[in-house]
Image 1 (cartoon, rainbow, N blue to C red):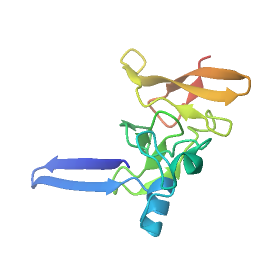
Image 2: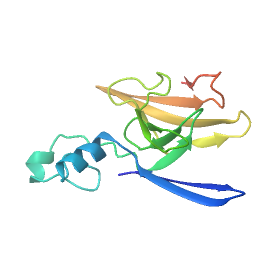
Image 3: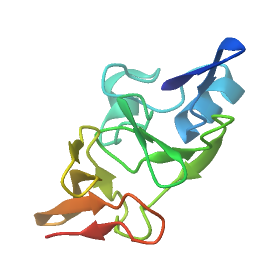
Image 4: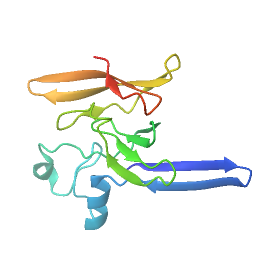
Length: 151
């Protein structure tokens, strides 16, 4: 499960805070006291039969990205989780202003920064059987400009 860490440095010194991203996986595992959903690197109890044909849980544990007014916890196979920039409290899964569509609407955890446009460029995918839609996505630097698909 993803844990986000923040350091605040000012004239009074350095402050540290950290929070687990409150994903559905984190909440159900914590409440049950045991693993309820499977991940990429681990299986839930019950062997192959209990894990077959189940998608891995979104654990928001790969990377972070500062958005227009929030922090995004990223994971390879699903939507990002929005976090409050000051408290690190989880806001919930986000669709990036409706750009991520479909049941999965995945957004890669490995974006790149474009200094020319002051934006983050990434890709996402949407599985529509029998094809996979791959999208090029640009995240705007300000709230006035929306996140948009570039094709």
